[in-house]
Length: 287
Image 1: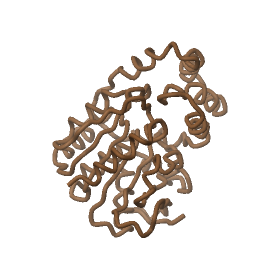
Image 2: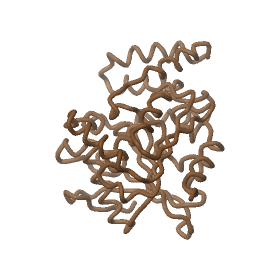
Image 3: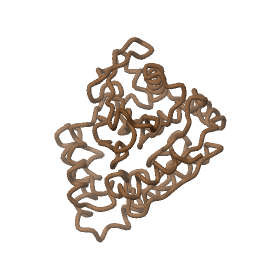
Image 4: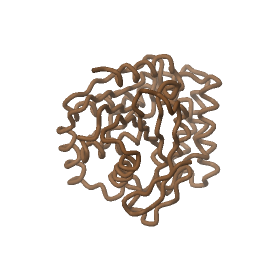
């Protein structure tokens, strides 16, 4: 894997997927979790077919080493790692896609470096940065109580609040996993089976550390200065972050649109790649 050196001289890794001779500009892609190995993004349902995807392993995930200072796991600091990656790649401006908690990193980057972005795609973001936590994810989950997997997933959710052993947490995560997908077929089962081994507890715990109210408000103020077009993708079966969170995130930007995908959960490129990929590509191509 190629590497780059960031602002504190840490050597971080990234992957490059897709054709090297593509005439299309690359798309930088950020994983969520927080603290999850970016391998779960795969090729984002086929987005790498026609353009290169640049996918960094954030600190303490994938092939990137753990941070010497735990404060480096906070998402505003991860945004500075992204700026170092941009400089390493020699990109004056670039398009950025971020999933889940990666959307917080992307928003911190957009607030700090608005002139660097040509397009911003936020996939199933949460709205903690916006200061609100809508409850529609629970409503979506409850509405699926007739599905076969639901009783086990519901029980696993309750047990996760008290689980401490990592092996137990991993088992419970898989039992609860169907709530994150639009359906529970073989592709979804295979994707969910990777989650337990991909989570980094330490990077996860440090993601929001040091982000006080003053900084949160400063980041939100910075988003009002982001001129590039923003696409927020939600799934109407996303029982992790729901749909209202994405709508709240979109209101932080002056030039944002929300596009819900029918039948998609928290990983729309797994559930509905034939809807997800054209949506993103059309947005990236738009004049």
